[in-house]
Amino acid sequence: MYIAKRRRLQPIIILLIAASVFLVACGAEVADQNWPGLAVNDGIVYAAYGPGVAAVDIQEQSLLWRFPDEVNPGLLFFASPSINDERIVFGDYGAPGGMFAPQSTVTIYSLENGAAVNAPSILWARDDVALDRVVASATQADDQIFVGTADNRLYALDASDGSVQWEFETAHSIWAQPLYNEGIVFIASLDNSVYALSADNGDLLWQTELSGSVASSPVLQDGLLYVPSFDRVLHALDAETGQEQWSADAENWIWGSPEIGNGTVYYADINGNIYAAGATSGEQRWRYSIDGAIQSKPLYVDGMLFVTAGEIEGDEDERIGQILALDVEAGTEIWRRETSAPVFTGPVAVDDSVVIVFQQGGATILQVYTRENGALVWDLTLPAD
Image (cartoon, rainbow, N blue to C red; front, side, top):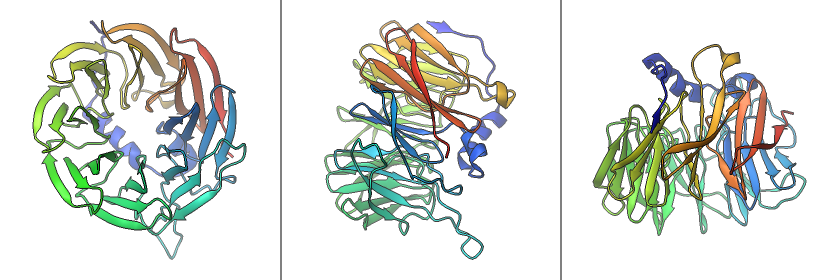
């Protein structure tokens, strides 16, 4: 076990982290939030990074396309795209409505999936559904699409045209991606609650109230729903009833979703602590600590755990980030690489590589490392215009 000496996050810093999500001003200011969305499908990485959504072929080391073709300075994208064989679905942060329409117009897009060089065609786009920005990835299940928004609602949309089938209202914003399993949709909200809903009609099956907000999606495995929370606890709930089976403590807020692998659940807090606990018991197996806040989901691949982090204190131009790889059996560090800016988006895996994305000033940088030793293979600055 290794615990590095570091400064504790002061309460004002924690508030600044939360406040940063709400800041939607000019492109440069938003870029400094370091919160691009990242998803992967069939070797293609999709990044929602402010000016647009880009598709990058990792093997070919090339940018395939960026949507939209022309940048709209008032339109921003940060929700991770949801990808299946037919569609790429995502929402935006909203475009300003203008003098006579002060409320932003938020649009949910469905694009035709394909690895074309040019941006894929729009299957449909709905700007008459969400009333506030889309923060999290949508979830696609058969002929339905589930989208949580900052207007305190979960929408179930018809995948063919985006029409609303039903909606469910919570008491606060939904920043977490909905989770679908066998006809049930699980959602978590900043109102401190986790909900289980019927996918057919949105009827409430159960609701469990925690003592802290939930900003990231729960993870389901073997009948247990693992829920991260700002109450400094990872909760394991019975997926059928919502009753808590066990809980595991953390030193501070658990922002990112947990990761499960090899019978173990891995999670991290914003003080830079990484925890490994038994998936069925919650008993802590090891803890590893670093300098920097962790706000993203760890990534488990073949006995290795990859974690991104970053500094949130100090001069903005001097803040750095890092990606590190841990041995999941021993909880020891295998390699670590420093980045030129904080990294608060979780990594994704493509073949023998691990991919990260972060923003530095007005630029968004995608980097590809080898999983085995952390060698930087190549990087790409995504187009800003």
